[in-house]
Image 1: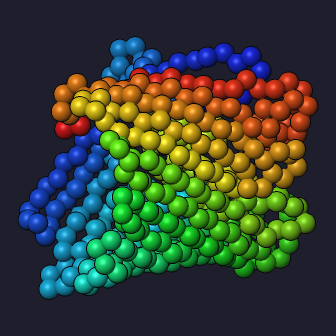
Image 2: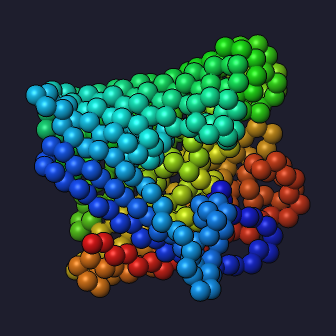
Image 3: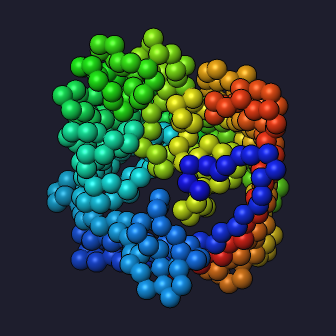
Length: 408
């Protein structure tokens, strides 16, 4: 289920089947003006409600349910006599931190200009105005506004560097919470390798006492509170033989959960279910980008790992031979802050995928993954990362998946 899976001694296997269709319609007046719409239809065989599936999903007996989701509706146009292009409305946005802050769909306006080797972007989003209380996705009173500044400079055809500043302003009752995220990024092609690196630093404060999305529920709020956190990632693809070697690593700082220290040191994403680290190529340690609505990762749908932070290293190889494509990966992850647990180790995953292109736009693939639990989850007679005292070790989880993918 979303949020990870249940670990237990002697756990039984389970199965589910899901489907997703995404349909896009573009009303194009010219190259300088178009309306982009994007819709999604999700179902689980047998039907399901709750979570990502709203009131019904049309997968139950006799179907006939309302399942059409609006993913994007926005205008895309060039501002006359300027080098600036604007997108206004419900639109996709990808962060400049390799997905560690958030790749999401949201309502807002983005202005992007190309000035020779420099590309500059300003974006404004209202990411919540519903009065909900989920961390980083809402507040009891008022709205959350996100301002984004990104700049990229192409030093030459092989090297690009960038800098970013994101400000999230959150009105929480009578308090105001400000979360600032600044960062640097770079992409370089060196011989047979393409390397991407990102670094982010967060700081912010709450100007009046009270519980907020930035401090969470980690003890009492004593006067002015704040956050100082960091994140970093690096990923590389290296052409070797008929395919490519993939290597990647990431670090998200975690909080010590000290009730006497209201200052948070945990990296904050813009919200759950919107942050990915695609280069990991994991299925059971972290969420794979190929999942539809159900996540099978032990960390769940938020890389921040319940504010404990995350440290991971991953490697793999991918390639193709005729109509057959394949990849295999290994990865290790641990909590950046183990808190009161005896160990911070989450585990080591091994996975492999083999696929076949039935037609040019239809492919079938099978995936197998196995997770060797670390002592933070699988050790006998230990205090585990989820806070429980384990008298028996958990079974190592595994999964198998079959997928059909049609692109048109």
